[in-house]
Amino acid sequence: FGLYASRAYLDRRPAPKSAAELVHHDFVGFDASLDHLAHYRWLRKQVREPRFAIRASTTMAQVGACLANQGISILGSYIGRAEPGLVRVLPRIELPTSEVWVAVHEDVRPNARVAAVVEWLAAAAHTIVP
Image (tube, rainbow, N blue to C red):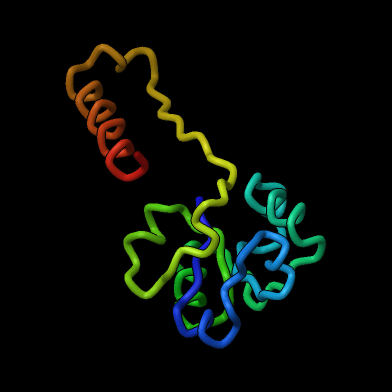
């Protein structure tokens, strides 16, 4: 994960130089029902009461709000890097990571087609998140 914002937002509100300066910024995030996620717990350690300009139920809505200059969002790095309208904020700060699991029923695990899909998913994940 990383912090991302639009260039226009950062032109209007100078980019933070440290996590402590995040208190001066607006945020775009998931709705409050997901505040238990590790990256939002991390944000609350940096900013006790973050100002959310927009809270959305989808990642794409967050990206759209960021592109509309609404604030800084915590996005998967593979999403932020792929969107040319977004700029990484505080790139040296490490945010919490998230595990990805693939569940396969034991009866189909030996199936060559299922194994091929699982191997492809693992390889694809490594190209998205090195």
